[in-house]
Length: 401
Image 1 (cartoon, rainbow, N blue to C red):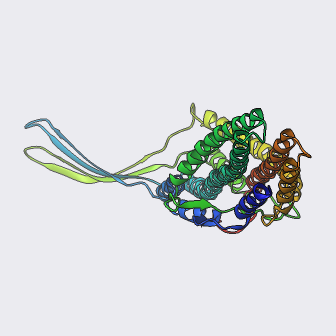
Image 2: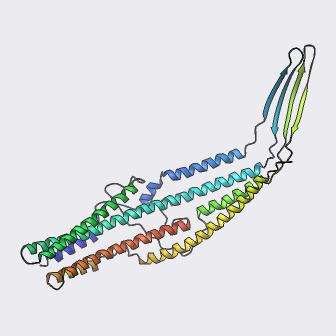
Image 3: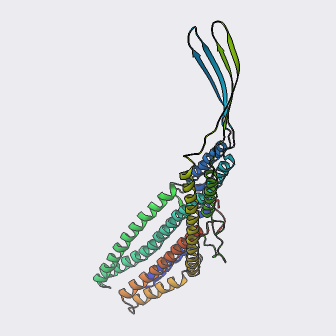
């Protein structure tokens, strides 16, 4: 009765060695397509345009004002006054432009930070899809092997060559595996549907290829983190706003014009000159100045806290990733040992040297090993994304990185 062993070997070897007919979608292909027109990135880029518009407006000189007045007292007197007023452009415009420049640069850094954030979210979607898809494959292999063994044992029990209770026990095992597979299929479909929202490359016939794990970096360089760069620019923006609010004197407003005064018998006309200059007796911009000083302090403290938090997260993420990276089984790991174990157990069972419990324990162990490898890979992929988030850049080039 070596038929059952040979069939099991064929099933396991076929699942390990035969490539799937479905189209394999790599993580880089998925990222390139999903990042191509992502709305959150487009929104961040629109913020740059908003900041650029504010920057342009900050450097604009104020318009002059043209004024005309008439006082008509009937036959006694009529007075016409034409005036052109303009406030001199010595109003701290240079510092306001510096504020706007820093805001533009910060918004550009936020675009990079948004791109990285969206990229990591998409990588998380793809990794969960891959793990769920592989879990289905593992359970399918286990179910097929157990189902074949159950059919073989049921046939022997019907012929009186095996105990019916053992055949029933295998049938219950098949039911348990079927239910686990149904749950895994539901999860895999949900993960695939989530990925399909962001990429048209995810179709009914596509399957995810294993994501690539890059070697851990030798050192940690946090100087390129776009969110920290944005915060540094926010500090510069706050300092420029502080310089704006240090001003107390407002620029004067100059007025020139012409006056025409006449009645029924005579007329007089002549030029009009004037200066309007606010005198800072009561309002000396005290509140705005205090608020600007506090704003600088706050932005500096937030930046320092973000730097320390980034260093802490980077150190922890590197240690976690380096450990898990060394534990992940290579993508080409053969299942020869698993096949040999299953074959030996089935042969011993046929020969009466092993119980059904031994066979089921062996089958479960081989599945547990495969699922454990898969969970280790999932944990390594998560740690890799956490390390990328801590570094502020992809560890691995590709995917519009």
